Amino acid sequence: MLAIRNGRILTAAAPGAAVPPVVEGGTILVENGKITAIGRDLAVPAGAEIIDATGKWVTPGIIDGHSHIGIEEDGVGWEGSDGNEATDPVTAECRAIDGINPADTAFEEVRRHGVTSVMVAPGSANVIGGQTVAIKCYGKVVDAMVVKNPAGMKAALGENPKRVYGSQNKKPSTRMGTAAVLRGALLAARDYMRKKEAARSKPDTAVDTNLKYEALIPVLRGEIPLRIHAHRADDIVTAIRIAEEFSIKITLEHCTEGDKIVDYIAEKKIPVIIGPSMYQRSKLEVKDRGFHTPVALAKAGVHVALTTDHPVMPAQYLRHAAGICIREGMPEEVALAAITRHAAEHIGIESRVGSLEPGKDADIVVWDGDPFEWLTKTEVTIIDGQVVYRREKGACR
Image (cartoon, rainbow, N blue to C red; front, side, top):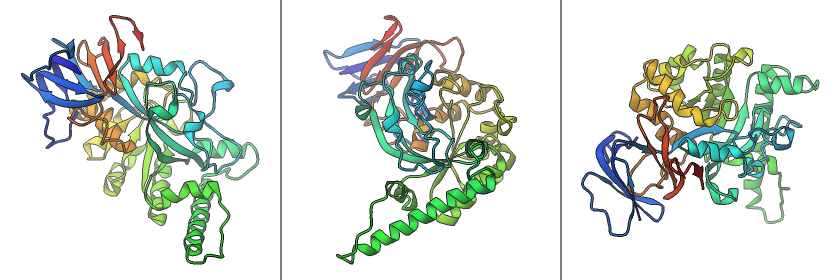
């Protein structure tokens, strides 16, 4: 049993939830890795470990909903770069879980800064890169860290695929070619799925297993979304066009120029994750990147989460990006949701994490002040009810 007492608790719970958005001087009770109660004046069972949060702020663990942590290792060269199988524009059969190294030093670093869950995705070299996975940021065996697998299928439009394959004198070398490759893969997978379904009623008919198409079947059935890397406004529109052609669910990953077509995205009700915004303009399609985009989309009612695209921008700075959004006009409760509840909803793990509510995983962070302020430090990080970082001890577990 664990009790966090007397803190200013920001629950990040959705409007209408059983717990209020803020509990002043509140207590959180944790047992068997789950939150059991939140409120003021709760009785703390005898023998419980107590964390005194007097004068401190308490939030859900921070979630980065689009990351390459563990699959593009921090401070390591090609030896730890396993996010892009850039040998074929369609590698749907690849799975991010097979490339993640839990020993990546970035995991310990992000725990020090309150990041408790991430979605790890293949990179954007390929038109279809492979399956994503949602994991906790603590553990030695990646399978034990999994929250949801698969959590989506990574796809990419824009500059990256056409640069990678155009330089090899292969298709795609244009945006037209990229869209054609994506359509072709979805069509082939749909035909494969129909043949498998037809074969079930014919005992003597067999369809050879194709791992690439097998991986795309959950996308075609709407069981997982196609998570489409798209920066430029025209690429965003192409992503939506193809989604409607195949009646599939998508998310917009990065959405840098989303502010230029904000009404269109809002009308289509497509969830977006925006970022990274605190880094250089590394290519033409991100020349207009900035914090105006998430602010504008959130104001229009779009479901907005924030990402660092770690290691492009280290994930420990996600809360600072949210703080800048507040400075630029985003309401504080929306900015908090963008790195907690909305991020969890974007990944599809909101039943377990993203807000502080009874029954959810005890992923909790205690801060020595306002978490959106630059000078604020992490006091305690808790994952699944275990204290995995204490500032007073200066080290993670």
